[in-house]
Image (tube, one colour):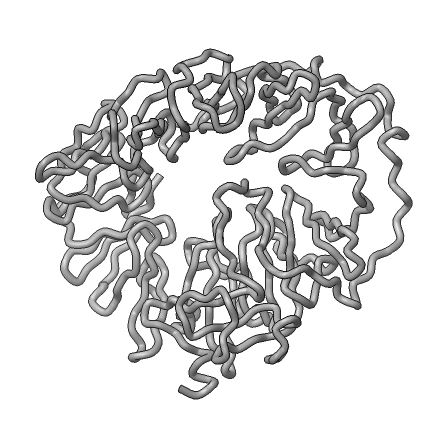
Length: 507
C-alpha cells in the first residue's frame, strides 16, 4: 500500500481512525460537559496570537463589599425541573427508495451508498447524497446537535459541520482536518498545513489501523494550527490558536489552556483574553471562586460577585444543577443549587449525585455503603448499597449490593427487579426469562413487555425483528408494524420494508 493509500484508508463503514498526538481522545465519563478536556500533550501559544491591552481587573477585595451571603439565598424546589418519561410521538416526514442504500449501526446510524470497493457516499435522512456525494463519513459530535462530515480533496481529508437535516454549518473547504467536541459550547478545530516526521510538533495523525493510541511507522503525521470554534456564534476564536496538540479545558463560555511559559490563558466566547491568572478557581460552567481572609467569594465569568460562602464548593459528577458543599471544620458534606442556595447544610460524610434530583449519602466516609436521598432531605433508603446510580431513565436507579448483584429501584426505594446480574441501562432494560425478553414498561413500573427478540433503537423504542414491529417502552404499545429493518439516524426513525424506507421525526 503506498503512502497516499494509507492516508486515505477508508473502510466501507467509514470507520477511519484519526488520533491526537501523544494519546487517543478517549471519553472520560466521570467528567461533566463543562469539564471536558482533550487528553493530549501540553500546548504552546501561537506566535502571532496578540490581544489589545486591557485595564487590570479589580482584585476580589476591591469589588463591592456588600456581597450577598450564601445563607441569604433561598432554594425553591420548583426551580429544579425533573426529567420526565415521554412516550415517542412519531410523524412521517419522508419516503425514499433504499434499494442501493445501507445503514451502519442502530441508535445513531450512518446512512450510505456504496461508490466502489473502497469508498462510500453518505446520505441524509431522506436518502439524498450529502455534499454532492462527496461526504464519505458522518459522525455525531458529543454534547452538541452538530455532525462532522469528511471529504477527500487533493490527497487530504477535510471536515465540515452540518445539522441533523444535512444543512451545512461550516463547509469542508476552510482547511479543517478534523473537529473534536470540547463541551456543548465549543469544538476544537485542527488545521493541518503539512506532513511532519516530528511527533512533538504534530497536531494529529492518520492511522491505517481502526484504533490507535500510539504513532506507528506507517502513520501520517500533520503539523499546523489548532483553535477553538464557538458553536453559538459560528466563529473561530483566534486567541485560542496553538501550534501543538492542545490541552484545552472548557467551562461554560470560557476556554483555558497554557502558553509557552506555562501561564494559564483564559479566553471567552467573544474571543477576549481574560486576566484571571491563578486568583480564581473554576467551578461548574459559570462560577469563579476566590479565596479571601474571611472565606470565599463566588463570581460569574464577568467577575461580578454572586455571593460569599464559608464552605468549599466542588462539582458533582453528571450534574450542572447541584454542587457539593464541604465544611472543613466538621468534615461534613451538603448540597448547593446552581444559584448558590443551600439545599442541604453539610451533615453527611459524603454525597454524590444519583440523577434527576436524587443523591446518594453516607454517614461514614467515601467508599462506605450508601443510601438514596431526596431533594428535600428525605432518606429514602438506608445505607444498604455499595453504590446507587441512575441510568438515563428518569426515576430509576441501579443499586449495587455486596453479593455482586444489582437491585433496580425506583425513586420511592421500591425494588422493581431484585438481584439483576448487571443492572439496567437505557438501551438494556429487560429481564431474560426462558425464551422471552421481558422489557420494562415504565408506565407500569414492571418488566411487562414480552418479546422473542428486541433491539433498542433509541428514544424509548424497541424493534423486534421476530415480531416485525417497533414498540414504545414507556407504554408498551406497538408503534409501527410490518417492519423489516429499523434504524435511528440523525435523530430520525427510519423504517425499511423491502426496498423502500419511511422516515419519521420523533418527539
